[in-house]
Structure formats: C-alpha cells, structure tokens
Image (cartoon, chains in turn brown, red):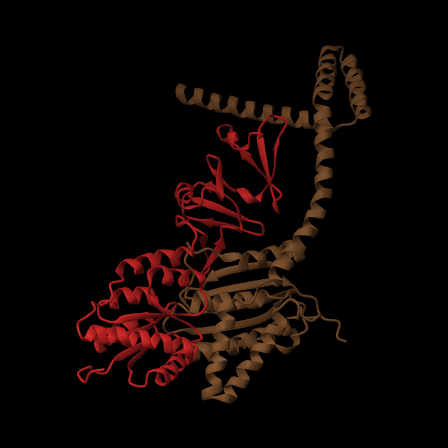
Amino acid sequence: MRASQINRALDFLRDAFDEASRLWWRFFDWLAVVEWRQLLLTWFLAWVFFIIVNTPEPAFWYTFISFGVKVLAGGKRKAELAARHATVQANVATLERRLMEAQMAALQAQVEPHFLFNTLALIGQLIETDPKEAARVHAHLIEYLRSTLPQMRSRGGATLGRQVELSRAYLAIMQARMKERLQVRFEVPDFLGSAPFPPMMLQTLIENAIKHGLEPKIAGGTVAVRAFVVEATLHVEVCDDGIGIDPHADDGVGLANIRERLQLLYGAAAQLAVSMPAQGGACATITLPYKMMEDA
Amino acid sequence: MNAQVSTVTALIADDEAPMRELLRARLAAAWPELRIVAEAANGVEAVELGERHRPDIAFLDIRMPGMSGIEAARRLYDRAHIVFATAYDQYALDAFEQGALDYLLKPVSSERLATTCARLRTRMEARQSGQAAPQDIGRQLAQLTTLLEHQGKPARPNYLRWIQAQVGASLRMISTREVLFFQSDEKYTRVQTASAEFLIRKPLKELLDELDPDEFWRVHRSTLVRVDAIAEVARDVRGRHMLKLRNYAGEIEVSRNHTYLFQQM
C-alpha cells in the first residue's frame, strides 16, 4: 500500500515538473518576441495587482526576471526571424531555377540510343521482307522523334491528348519489335484529350513498364494506360503485368524527375504513386488537379 | 576444303523476332552452307535448344529475358562457338575487344558479317581437323558479367531503394527518394513523405542496416532522416538541434549524441 502511494506521489511530482518546465519555456518564447511596450504594460499591471494585495515581492521578481530574459534572448530571436525572412526570399528564387533545370533534364536525351538503333535495324530488315510494315514503323518513328527531340518539339504539346499520341507511336514501334510479347490497352476518354498534362511523363512511365516490367519477362504482357477524373483530380495510370519491382532496384532518374517537376509545378496538389497490385505487375499513377475546360 | 567437313550448324537467340529474321537472312547470303538448326527467343530457350541440337556456333543477343546472353554463353561455350550480338553498348564492346570474343554489332551489316563468317569458317575447319582446341572463354565471360552488371562503375552494395507498405490489396512502393524520415512508433515504423504517412512493420534497426548510410542518417534513437531532405539545422532556445525538412511543416529533433553530424565545418 505504502509503496504504491509513494509511486503515485512520484508520478505526480514528475508530471508537475514536466508541466512546469513546459510552461516556463513557453513563457520564455513569448518574452523573446513580445514588444517592449506590451511588456511594460504587464509590469505595470503586476505591480498594481500585487500592491493591492499588499505583497510586492512577486511583482519585483517578475519584472526582474522578464527584463533579464528579454535583454539576453530577445536579440537572438529577432535575428532568427530576420534570417527566416531572407530564406523565404532565397527559396522562391531557388524554386524557379530548379523548375527550369528539371524541365531541361526531362527534355534532353530522352531518346535512348538503343531504341533508335534497334528501330532503324527493324526498318532496314522490314524494307526487305515487308515494305508496307516498314513504312508504318518509319512513320511512327518520325512521329515519336518529332515530339521527343527538344529542337523539334512544337509548342502546345502539353496536353494529355498529345502525350497519348506520342505514347501510341512509341508503343506501336515496340509492338513491331516485341510482336505478341507486348499487348497495349488505352482507356483514355476523348474529352480528356485537351486536359493540360506535362510533357514526357506518360512516356517515361510507359518506357519503365516495358523496360523493367515486360522485357525481362519471357512471356511478355500488357501495358494498360488509363485516364479518369475523380472529383477535381485527373488520374493517369500506367499498369503492366510484368515481373514487378525489385525493392533493391534503383528507381532511376526518370521517376525522380517526374516527382521533382510535379512538386515544382503543382506543389502538394500533384503526386506520383507507384504500387504493386495483388495480382502482380506494377502500376504508376500520376494525379494532378483537373479544371473543367472552358470549351472553345 | 576437304570432303570430310560436315555441315556447320548454328543457333540464333534474340528476343525480337525481326532481329532473328534479319540475322538469318544475312547469314543465308554470307554463308549459304551454314544450317540454322534452332531459333530461341530468350536465354533459357537458347540453353535448352543448344543442348538438344548441339550447334557448332551460337549467335547470342546480350539482353534477353529470363537469362542474359552472357549467362547462356557460360552454359554453352564448351559445346558451341559463341558469337555475341549487341546493339549499342560501349561497355560490352570494350569487353569483347579485351576478351578477344567474337561479336556482331546490330543492326548487322553484310560486310561485317562476311568478315566474321570467314573467320568462323577457318576456325570451324581447324577445329574439325583437330588442329585447334575449342574456345576456352570461361574467364572472359565471368569478367564480362561483372563489367556489364556495374556498367563500368565500381561495385555498389545492394541497398534498399523501395519501401513496401500495404495499402488495401496492393503494395504501395515508396521510393527512398520520396521518404523524408522514418520514425519508430511502438510496434510500427512510420514512413513520412511530403504528401502522406505510411506505417510499415519493418523495425528501424533493420532499415538502418539495409538503407544506404549516405542517403539516410540516424539523428535520434527513433529517427532516420534522408540527408537530401534536410533544409536547415537550427538550435532552438533550449540549445537543442532541430532539423527543418523540405516540404514538411514539422521539425525533427536531433538527440545529443548525434549532434556531431551537424557540427559546423
């Protein structure tokens, strides 16, 4: 009985001490930022109150301690606030520079030499065996290069419709190479064609799905591209039924660049989420704010 | 040329059917007597067909699903002469040159193929008449494997790059580059990203062992912070070091025995 009573008393003391120290630091922070005018006012009120109750000592101690703390800590605190303001200014400038760098990185060197060589080899071979197919692949390659090479990129390419066209061209070329090992499915409603969508994001996700999901899989599989709107959010999803993601595999510059650009363009309102569904494969979903289009 | 030379046989392995057709067509022109006995669409098939048909020559693409061309070569080189085929890969080309291995550059040009075929022909004749030993390239292949795996970079330990968190029926894959910090929270470990928070069962101690120590620092008994996410280190009025992170409102406390990480230079 006695032991438990002592324990309870100790607990109470510890809590009381914690609370007191919390209050003290809160008082300290308040002192550091409060204006001198307000502080003088509280001193005055304290003196009035304690003189009325006829015990002036607490008022004296209050004035003495708060004056001391204010003098010693106030300057440091002010400097901190000034530094924070300067940091915000600097951050805005950094943000703009980072966005530009990220855009540049996304637009450069997007065409893998492997892809180009293999496609040209394919066209060369098809010219001998199947000239019609050769012409088709050739047209797709031009379409793909037109929107991929920075020098050739036309303005106004940043719509979902344009990005889907580009991806279709790329996938058609990959199908000509991988044959029955690559199936493609698009579920993108027409009305979303005009929705703004940053360039080279869908393309990167599709290339990843093929390169890391399907190419290493002997049987191959399907790439499914889906776009839909839930409330005011546009979802663009690229799923494959490939070998899934190895937790030790580097996620590569492609995904990091998408994340960086989404963050700079939309802040917290946009996201890239990668997942592995229970039935296997991998899904990457970009969500960003969607505004009803002002139909022209 | 003597009469006892039997027909030379070959196997073609490439995961892209048009590439196989192209090589077959070019070979038919450059070396009409060569008989293609099998075509494989991946490394596993190449080994299987190689063992069944015992070709004299195996043309192997490097990048194939299931098993790479190099791995397939390691299982076949004692029975078939290996010729690699690759599109564009400087590391592989350097390695082939160093190891004196036969290779073809895709897309295969007729002239280049003619030279390779002439060389292969002499080699096959020499081997059939017992004048040359079969190629012994085990060591070169082992070198090639390490070279291609690291793409010319020094070997790096295999750190954890994706955190898996169960969300409904699927596994959410969180790249370590998204993570701001890990914090142990009784039975779970809390994974904080700029936009969300996840709970995983992997204890902080295991994460500490598996993550790249240059990417994440332990700043507290219960906290691992991604170094790149740190925006600033400030001392509060109590003298504690507090970390502010990019895209995160809260602050992370640095415990006293980890403050050495943030000493001024």
